[in-house]
Length: 146
Image 1 (cartoon, helix red, strand yellow):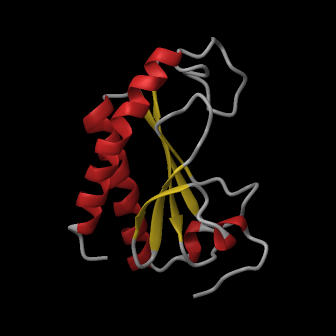
Image 2: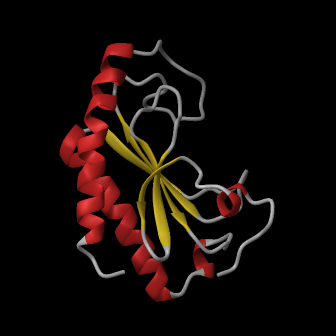
C-alpha cells in the first residue's frame, strides 16, 4: 500500500476512528461548531479521485453513501455536504457533513465566515446522538463485502 512520509492521513488516523475497513477508514473530525462532521479516508495515498480504479471508486462512494444515510436517518439535517477537496492535504478523503439551518455558517460552506453564534444546546444534542449513529455506521459498513 502506497504511503507518503509526512502526509498527515498516512501518518495519523485523521480524527477519532469510527470504522476501519481494508481500503478505507471512517473518522469523526473534531470541527468546532459542526458536531456531525465525518471523513471517509482512503488508506492508500492517492491524491485524486481518478487515481482509483473503477472498482475502488465504487467501494469509496458506497462508504460515503452509508455515512451520509446514517446521518440523514438519525439527524434529519437540512443538507448533507460532501466534498473531496484535498487542497491542504492531498490524500483522498471525502468530507461528509450534516448541516443544519441553525449552524453558524448555514447556508454557506463550513469554511466561510460565520453568520450567527453557535447554539451549544443543539450541538450538544447532536453530540449525544453520535454514539448510536456511529454504531449504525459500523453495522452497515460491516455488513458489506468490501
